Image 1 (cartoon, rainbow, N blue to C red):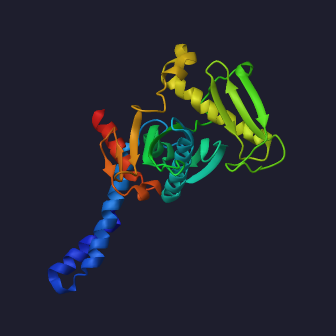
Image 2 (cartoon, helix red, strand yellow):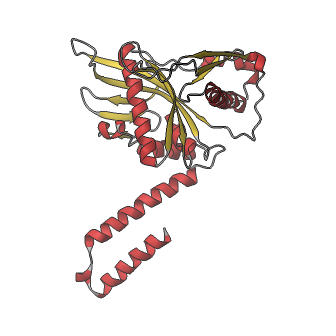
Image 3 (cartoon, rainbow, N blue to C red):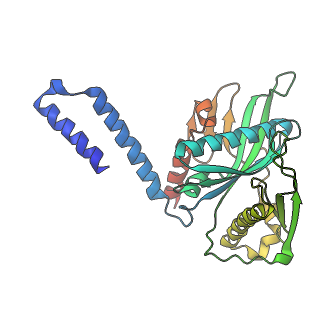
Length: 297
């Protein structure tokens, strides 16, 4: 930042001596770079809560809306993959369950990068899509819902007690979103934590042992989240507390018809270029959410 300001100061001093020598385009680019760097720095100063600097697990689940919801969940998955790419993060698809006709029922990403969880946590909640359905022969307007869940990846030095007796472990043959087999052995792993009803699964590795290891890491993060919420005594009831993935519970709406607008209902921040948003340009929503959390606190 200091280097950028020093360069700008040189331009100003030169301009004072000879106004005709000012390169307006170069100065404009420099000011834009300063504004962009300041914005990033501002976000990083906001990200000071525990686990903000951790890697993240981001899961997408199709909700109410049938095949349109499965398609919407797949669109969100693509949006977050593109966002991670823009941020310079590494996103790995841990698990994906194909929809019955199209799209996906659910998917989980592991996102690794500088403050990955701190940025991604703002996406936690129900996302609503309004569009002319490509799956409706009458081409009518449909509303679809998908749930996004974001968890920090818990470091190995944090102890989370999980009794092996409380685990139900199933193996199955891994398959991609299109139904194609990733391999021909039962390497995919699904773990159910019986007391809480939490289910995690992993299928991206060829080794059953590695898939089990990764699934246990996700389970550890989920259980640790419950403990942080100080609800150990209600741990078996938490499933019923979650909002349904339907009307009235959305945090953000993406409208493609009869107009185009993406609006976050928590911050009232909106953008009209919905294609850019679906292509991963969601930092404006993230910043608005983080700033509101600071102001609220």
